[in-house]
Image (cartoon, rainbow, N blue to C red; front, side, top):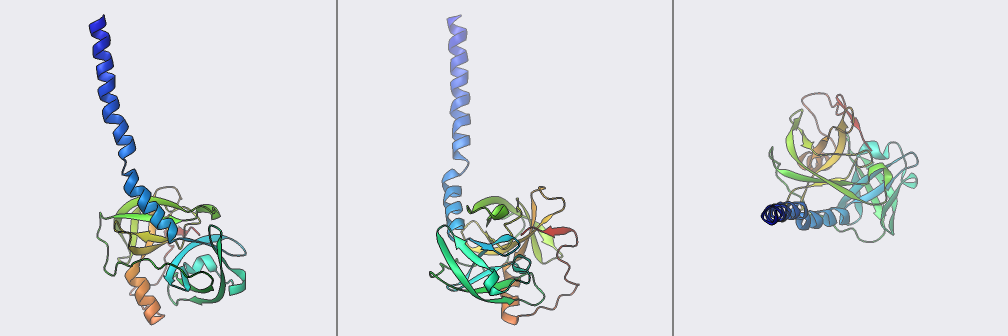
Length: 224
């Protein structure tokens, strides 16, 4: 009897030794660091009819989705991060893209590094934003699963309504894109991300000619 009890306790101890570290090790340190990094570079964008997210394009400009700001004027927008707020003084909507730039006045914005070259299928990404207008920033993790019309990235990771306009980071903390939409119906943990290279070109040109008509939400829906 004692032998059986001893073997049982030893077995439970072995299971515990293997199970507990896996639960704790879930890259909590790295993920904690990436979540903190993402939150430091993500802002809550509030409009008169809804909320979304954004990130710093430069020290006095927030970038977000065009569908997040809609037709709102600068006076109808608010930028927040924790207890900090910024006043929007100008809104510029980029032609042909779901992208808008917001010139702001307030504390200097920390600008994240940008990965100038594209992501490959299978690379891990971190999506950041304020779901449902939540004051707290959240991050979700996934990987690049493919391409949307050979342009935007499809990510296997949740993009929740309200995260539209939030930044997407690679494993080195560099911005590689911006949340734009989720698949229909929501909750399938697949999202559509505007590739950073298209954002850069769009802002530089203020217009992009696509080979096919721009219908970004034909099989998805905006989530901001």
